[in-house]
Image (tube, rainbow, N blue to C red; front, side, top):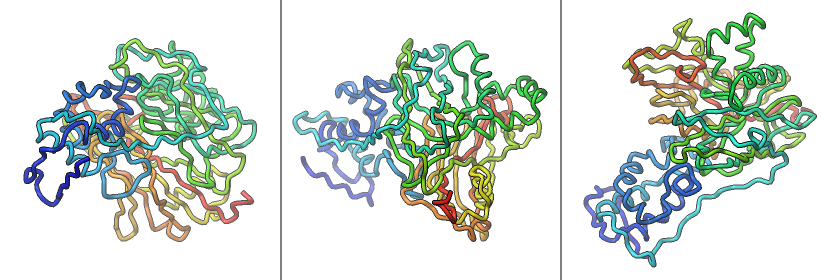
Length: 458
């Protein structure tokens, strides 16, 4: 292979890119970074045929130059993340050089070596079937179908999830999935929602909670029977894990796990996208779990949001006027996160010695524009954990830090975790915060590890 040296301190136009061609320089990148989705078994059109792919050259250069593809939303320069499949500056420069060389095909005999993405696998202790293993045909009258399916948790005693692996049955229609757990006290309500719908499962654009809970009439009927139940349902559905193309199985940080009580259920939110496979069903999707009966340090995915925003049609706390941009921000001290963790784990707050922050994850809906999660100290100094300058609902995921952030008990009151969401409303009507798919949200989910003063006793 010829060595092509690029000096990135100068303009690309200063160099001759006569040697850059598809087979030698571009195809290895396409195979390792694009074909997870763009293949015959993937969710989008295939890049496995070189002739077909070369014809997409101009569109590919545009997409990678703007960092829209591969769809890694996190802005570089803030944190190093696990399993980062974004392109390097050098790889993007090769695409631009290929364009300057008129998208030369090259010789198949000179094809460069593909650097495969690492697709980790786990050996599961528990495997659950989505929709009881039955076929589900995504709704054909809409581009995106967000469907939740309830799966019974089989463990009869308290257990800890220590790893996860999603295995969609048909990746041509399974775009991504998010896994939630629900505590025993709200399971009957979730099953009522499921039974009330004609199709399997229930519609759930906004997360693991049924969309119908955002209907004021439905919510009022529930509240009349059981005051406070709407908030109770939302408070007891917890983010556990996710899968997206390119994500294999993964273990949670060593010696940690998410506690699950007997009688709980798992809820998988399947995002189906049928544009490239109309009429095809998903069948045989499986969720794999590593499970332990004890861990040294419990872990939790704790949400960060302003609960008032979810009732914005009444209290006007989140309002995005037609044709306008609006930014909302909320800040919560790490001391408050420690208190939440103590309540969930049924321990006293003073038993918590420190918190470890391992990830960040922004969640908005359709008109989200950008978002940022950062730590702010009492002097106003900010440390950005995650910045997403161009939000895309279709590619939300956890961003796990290669190095966790440790917050001691003494530091907890003086540091805050902050999320900031910017929305751009292209509609002719005002959009409010809320639970429905036409409403908006601003959430961060972070994986916290709780260091207790007496871990083994716990």
